Figure: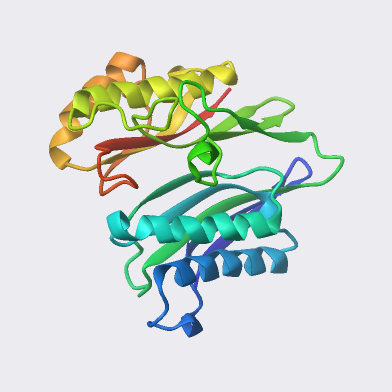
Length: 254
């Protein structure tokens, strides 16, 4: 069963849903695309039961087993489900290899949704690609970042961001130091649209393909201005393109 929590603040309802897998009746014989589509559809049904819709989702975390082989199928399912929902914006997102222990599923989903009343002093808007191209330009349905604007707080949820250029190509294949530098530059360019920088980051998660890259990650983080006091989890796993050696997601606020 998925785990969920919700709270209301400033006229808006905030919902977190984690460890959501496809429904058991999808069957072991179904392909990855069918599993992934059912997972998104199930999330929409649960949100509906909470009085929300998938159009209220601002952030997703997708977990995929054997991502080198299964990412394309998951992405097709996500694209199809999102298109059917007619979303007014695409959520920020991270997709990496691995699923929660005990789910017995090749895919799993966490999400964060915000449902604001018409009189809430809260605005949601999409931040754009900065030095990168839009993910939709190469057929992937997510936004580079989502900003929540309240009367006294701006919050930015930056998607998983790697070493990619404006044409959607992997930068510096095989060179983890150069990829880390590009990764942090890309995050900085996104935050700049919200008049923020890495000093505004309140938490981060970095995904490294190889544990041996940790020292280079620490070097790059300090060189680019991510303070040592910022909580930063480091996870060793595969990322959605085999050539990527690193990826980072951040939450920033001002």
